[in-house]
Length: 159
Image (cartoon, rainbow, N blue to C red; front, side, top):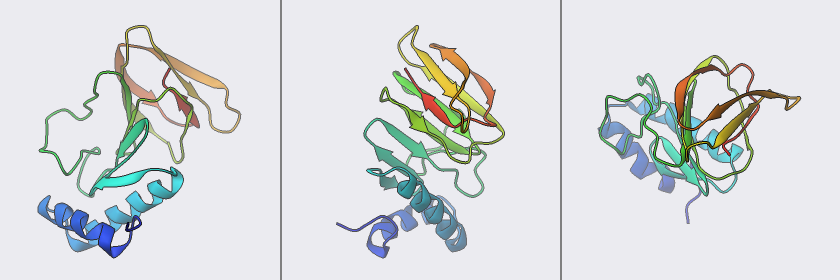
């Protein structure tokens, strides 16, 4: 089986990225971002030009020219952040994180303002912790949506 970032792995996704209007340079830049995330989240795998998935979560990487991450394998929608039932979804720095599994997820390079949708079972509380100390920063009770300051968020627990 090809490893992420190998020519055999990247070729179909490069074709997909090109079909979405990305130049070769933009495609290489996007693949580099995807490869970096795969290294950060062991067990994850690339499933489209700008999406990785693993048990309990998926991440959609912002492609060059996008305002927010939107899976290049799917037709464009007007919603900046769609969120399936049962998920806590966040957009930070253009990358979309869709968390499902009830565990602590560690964040890297989360800065600035982000968007979130807590579309879990009603009453489920998601907790956001600071970078480093792990102190509770804020919580969100499902259903809730809005914007948040991601500086600094070091980890998230969706349940």
